[in-house]
Length: 335
Image 1 (cartoon, rainbow, N blue to C red):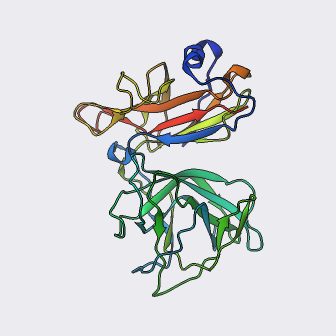
Image 2 (cartoon, one colour; image 1 turned 90 degrees about the vertical axis):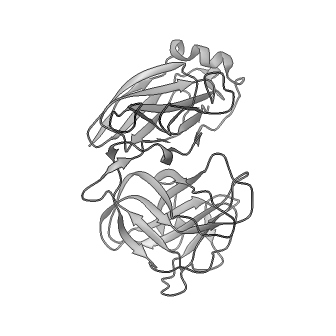
Image 3 (tube, rainbow, N blue to C red; image 1 turned 90 degrees about the horizontal axis):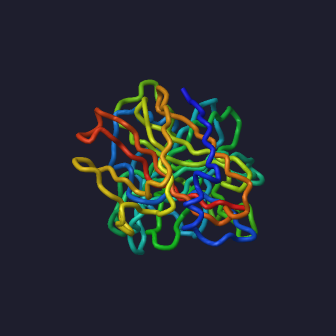
């Protein structure tokens, strides 16, 4: 079950944050970017996602798809109505320096066979990249989203950011044994998508909510909609233990005077990340999924400001400290 709780970041609440933020800009595109430690190291007792609901080219994989910068999108024609909460691909790493923040953006699009992905993504989430040795296989890379219902006959596109500065390239496997060719689209420099150089026998599994979620989920924090002055965007929490949590909003990426590192909670592998400037209690419903609409005041001084968010979840069964944490989320206010 999903629950919404409205959050108003009023001028009084964030005045201190504005004083320490960047100067206001005339035109800025709002964004929400994950940062901090990989939250997969902070498991809780909340429900975890289920298993595969559709597997394409399952089995042994071999061969690596082309390493092309930008967003890759692979087309799947939906054969039956289903709920999708993520996808999973096996991959290896190319050359490059490992990132201290192992995240890549992932997307779900709808579209058609002629034009590829159409419009904005219907879901945006994250791939939590397992760092590995260049040229060697890693555990499957799983992207996660809030639930999306897709219907028979629709064209669903699974997509991700292929690489970015400071991150190892994520090179997905193709399957040479039992290939089902998936039309492949790449991000165009002029906007939208264009057909890729080949059809790809990608190994991919669509993930669903599962009939019987098992304990051990890691609480995750994402956002949807553009953070923009005078507008509302939503912060999403899921896989959290039902009960009480605290949404932390800070001016600084890292708190407690540490400068550039999260603070580890004693006896756990969980970390506190941003500065503790504004604390707001949230009631987490059964099922551990909730959205929190955030209304940004219509104040030009906010444009370009950076806010940093994290949710701390009370979870007595998770560890000795009785808490789990999400990764950080850096919010840039647009206008």
